[in-house]
Image: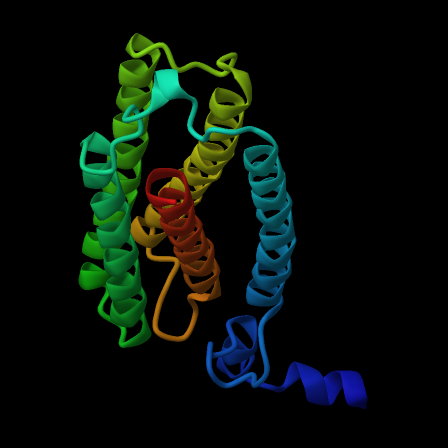
Amino acid sequence: MTADGHAMIPADEHAPLAGLAHDSRGGISNVILGMILFIASEVMFFAGLFAVYFSTRAANKPWPPEEFKGVLNPLSLILVATVILIISSVTCQLAIRAIRRGDRRGFLRNIGMTFVLGIVFLVLQAYDYSLLFQEGLTLGSGPFGTTYFTLTGFHGAHVFGGVIMLGVILYRGMSGQFSAKHHDAVEAASLYWHFVDVVWIVLFSILYFL
Protein backbone atom coordinates (compact mmCIF):
# COMPACT_ATOMS: atom_id res chain seq x y z
CA MET A 1 0.00 0.00 0.00
CA THR A 2 2.82 2.34 0.91
CA ALA A 3 4.70 1.52 -2.23
CA ASP A 4 1.61 2.10 -4.38
CA GLY A 5 0.90 5.41 -2.69
CA HIS A 6 4.47 6.54 -3.24
CA ALA A 7 4.27 5.56 -6.91
CA MET A 8 1.21 7.76 -7.41
CA ILE A 9 3.13 10.91 -6.43
CA PRO A 10 3.70 13.01 -9.58
CA ALA A 11 7.28 13.11 -10.77
CA ASP A 12 7.41 16.91 -10.64
CA GLU A 13 6.82 16.87 -6.90
CA HIS A 14 10.17 15.14 -6.50
CA ALA A 15 12.01 17.71 -8.64
CA PRO A 16 12.58 20.27 -5.87
CA LEU A 17 14.18 17.56 -3.74
CA ALA A 18 16.88 17.03 -6.36
CA GLY A 19 18.11 20.60 -6.03
CA LEU A 20 17.14 22.17 -2.74
CA ALA A 21 17.17 25.95 -2.76
CA HIS A 22 20.44 27.49 -1.67
CA ASP A 23 18.81 29.54 1.08
CA SER A 24 15.98 27.24 2.07
CA ARG A 25 17.91 24.48 3.81
CA GLY A 26 19.01 26.56 6.77
CA GLY A 27 22.41 26.31 8.41
CA ILE A 28 25.41 25.86 6.20
CA SER A 29 25.95 23.48 3.31
CA ASN A 30 28.59 20.74 3.39
CA VAL A 31 30.46 22.37 0.50
CA ILE A 32 30.83 25.72 2.25
CA LEU A 33 31.55 24.11 5.63
CA GLY A 34 34.26 22.01 4.03
CA MET A 35 35.84 25.09 2.48
CA ILE A 36 35.74 26.98 5.79
CA LEU A 37 37.50 24.10 7.54
CA PHE A 38 40.06 23.91 4.74
CA ILE A 39 40.72 27.66 4.98
CA ALA A 40 41.11 27.31 8.76
CA SER A 41 43.86 24.75 8.19
CA GLU A 42 45.49 27.06 5.65
CA VAL A 43 45.42 29.92 8.15
CA MET A 44 47.42 27.76 10.56
CA PHE A 45 49.80 26.81 7.74
CA PHE A 46 50.56 30.43 6.84
CA ALA A 47 50.72 31.38 10.51
CA GLY A 48 53.53 28.85 10.84
CA LEU A 49 55.32 30.34 7.84
CA PHE A 50 54.99 33.85 9.28
CA ALA A 51 56.37 32.61 12.62
CA VAL A 52 59.40 31.14 10.83
CA TYR A 53 59.89 34.38 8.92
CA PHE A 54 59.86 36.60 12.00
CA SER A 55 62.10 34.27 14.00
CA THR A 56 64.56 34.12 11.09
CA ARG A 57 64.44 37.87 10.71
CA ALA A 58 65.10 38.41 14.41
CA ALA A 59 68.11 36.09 14.28
CA ASN A 60 69.69 37.75 11.24
CA LYS A 61 70.77 41.38 11.40
CA PRO A 62 70.68 43.57 9.40
CA TRP A 63 67.46 42.75 7.57
CA PRO A 64 67.51 42.86 4.65
CA PRO A 65 71.24 42.21 4.15
CA GLU A 66 73.20 45.14 2.80
CA GLU A 67 73.58 43.57 -0.67
CA PHE A 68 69.80 43.29 -1.03
CA LYS A 69 68.69 46.64 0.34
CA GLY A 70 66.26 48.26 -2.10
CA VAL A 71 65.76 45.08 -4.11
CA LEU A 72 62.24 44.57 -2.79
CA ASN A 73 60.72 47.80 -4.04
CA PRO A 74 57.00 48.10 -3.17
CA LEU A 75 56.50 50.68 -5.93
CA SER A 76 57.59 48.31 -8.68
CA LEU A 77 55.78 45.73 -10.80
CA ILE A 78 54.70 43.87 -7.67
CA LEU A 79 52.42 46.78 -6.74
CA VAL A 80 50.61 46.38 -10.07
CA ALA A 81 50.21 42.66 -9.36
CA THR A 82 48.82 43.46 -5.91
CA VAL A 83 46.24 45.87 -7.31
CA ILE A 84 45.21 43.29 -9.90
CA LEU A 85 44.69 40.64 -7.21
CA ILE A 86 42.58 43.05 -5.14
CA ILE A 87 40.47 43.89 -8.20
CA SER A 88 40.00 40.17 -8.83
CA SER A 89 38.55 39.81 -5.36
CA VAL A 90 36.07 42.59 -6.17
CA THR A 91 35.00 40.95 -9.44
CA CYS A 92 34.65 37.63 -7.61
CA GLN A 93 32.25 39.23 -5.15
CA LEU A 94 30.33 40.83 -8.00
CA ALA A 95 29.97 37.36 -9.52
CA ILE A 96 28.53 36.09 -6.25
CA ARG A 97 26.01 38.93 -6.11
CA ALA A 98 25.01 38.29 -9.71
CA ILE A 99 24.34 34.57 -9.26
CA ARG A 100 22.45 35.19 -6.03
CA ARG A 101 19.92 37.24 -7.95
CA GLY A 102 19.86 34.83 -10.89
CA ASP A 103 21.88 37.01 -13.26
CA ARG A 104 23.84 34.31 -15.07
CA ARG A 105 25.32 36.64 -17.66
CA GLY A 106 26.67 38.97 -14.98
CA PHE A 107 27.98 35.98 -13.06
CA LEU A 108 29.85 34.56 -16.05
CA ARG A 109 31.26 37.96 -16.97
CA ASN A 110 32.63 38.64 -13.50
CA ILE A 111 33.87 35.14 -12.73
CA GLY A 112 35.58 35.13 -16.14
CA MET A 113 37.30 38.41 -15.28
CA THR A 114 38.39 36.98 -11.92
CA PHE A 115 39.84 33.95 -13.68
CA VAL A 116 41.79 36.10 -16.15
CA LEU A 117 43.05 38.48 -13.44
CA GLY A 118 44.28 35.53 -11.42
CA ILE A 119 46.31 34.33 -14.39
CA VAL A 120 47.69 37.85 -14.94
CA PHE A 121 48.80 37.98 -11.30
CA LEU A 122 50.70 34.71 -11.69
CA VAL A 123 52.37 35.93 -14.88
CA LEU A 124 53.42 39.19 -13.21
CA GLN A 125 54.75 37.35 -10.19
CA ALA A 126 56.78 35.04 -12.41
CA TYR A 127 58.18 38.06 -14.28
CA ASP A 128 58.98 39.78 -10.98
CA TYR A 129 60.88 36.66 -9.94
CA SER A 130 62.96 36.92 -13.10
CA LEU A 131 63.82 40.53 -12.26
CA LEU A 132 64.83 39.55 -8.73
CA PHE A 133 67.03 36.77 -10.13
CA GLN A 134 68.81 39.39 -12.25
CA GLU A 135 69.42 41.38 -9.05
CA GLY A 136 71.05 38.31 -7.52
CA LEU A 137 68.21 37.40 -5.14
CA THR A 138 67.45 33.69 -5.35
CA LEU A 139 66.17 30.91 -3.11
CA GLY A 140 69.78 30.22 -2.15
CA SER A 141 70.56 33.81 -1.16
CA GLY A 142 70.78 33.05 2.53
CA PRO A 143 67.88 33.34 5.01
CA PHE A 144 66.53 36.47 3.31
CA GLY A 145 66.14 34.88 -0.10
CA THR A 146 64.93 31.59 1.32
CA THR A 147 62.16 33.12 3.42
CA TYR A 148 61.06 35.49 0.65
CA PHE A 149 60.71 32.85 -2.04
CA THR A 150 59.23 30.31 0.36
CA LEU A 151 56.47 32.67 1.48
CA THR A 152 55.66 34.09 -1.94
CA GLY A 153 56.11 30.72 -3.64
CA PHE A 154 53.63 28.97 -1.39
CA HIS A 155 51.19 31.82 -1.89
CA GLY A 156 51.66 31.61 -5.65
CA ALA A 157 50.89 27.89 -5.48
CA HIS A 158 47.66 28.70 -3.66
CA VAL A 159 46.76 31.30 -6.28
CA PHE A 160 47.40 28.69 -8.98
CA GLY A 161 45.06 26.31 -7.17
CA GLY A 162 42.49 29.08 -6.93
CA VAL A 163 42.76 29.79 -10.66
CA ILE A 164 42.09 26.12 -11.41
CA MET A 165 39.10 26.25 -9.07
CA LEU A 166 37.79 29.37 -10.82
CA GLY A 167 38.28 27.70 -14.18
CA VAL A 168 36.11 24.78 -13.08
CA ILE A 169 33.47 27.17 -11.74
CA LEU A 170 33.53 29.11 -15.01
CA TYR A 171 33.14 25.92 -17.04
CA ARG A 172 30.26 24.72 -14.89
CA GLY A 173 28.65 28.14 -15.09
CA MET A 174 28.84 28.13 -18.87
CA SER A 175 27.16 24.70 -18.76
CA GLY A 176 24.26 26.24 -16.85
CA GLN A 177 24.90 24.34 -13.62
CA PHE A 178 24.46 27.35 -11.31
CA SER A 179 21.39 29.40 -10.45
CA ALA A 180 20.07 31.64 -7.70
CA LYS A 181 19.01 28.49 -5.84
CA HIS A 182 22.06 26.35 -6.51
CA HIS A 183 25.48 27.96 -6.25
CA ASP A 184 27.18 26.64 -3.11
CA ALA A 185 30.29 25.73 -5.10
CA VAL A 186 30.57 29.34 -6.28
CA GLU A 187 30.27 30.60 -2.69
CA ALA A 188 32.97 28.17 -1.57
CA ALA A 189 35.33 29.18 -4.38
CA SER A 190 34.81 32.85 -3.56
CA LEU A 191 35.72 32.25 0.10
CA TYR A 192 38.98 30.64 -0.98
CA TRP A 193 39.79 33.43 -3.42
CA HIS A 194 39.15 36.13 -0.81
CA PHE A 195 41.41 34.21 1.58
CA VAL A 196 44.19 34.13 -1.01
CA ASP A 197 43.76 37.88 -1.53
CA VAL A 198 43.97 38.67 2.20
CA VAL A 199 47.06 36.49 2.63
CA TRP A 200 48.81 38.35 -0.18
CA ILE A 201 47.99 41.75 1.32
CA VAL A 202 49.54 40.61 4.61
CA LEU A 203 52.55 39.15 2.80
CA PHE A 204 53.06 42.25 0.70
CA SER A 205 52.87 44.51 3.76
CA ILE A 206 55.33 42.42 5.78
CA LEU A 207 57.88 41.72 3.06
CA TYR A 208 57.93 45.13 1.39
CA PHE A 209 57.13 47.63 4.15
CA LEU A 210 58.28 46.22 7.53
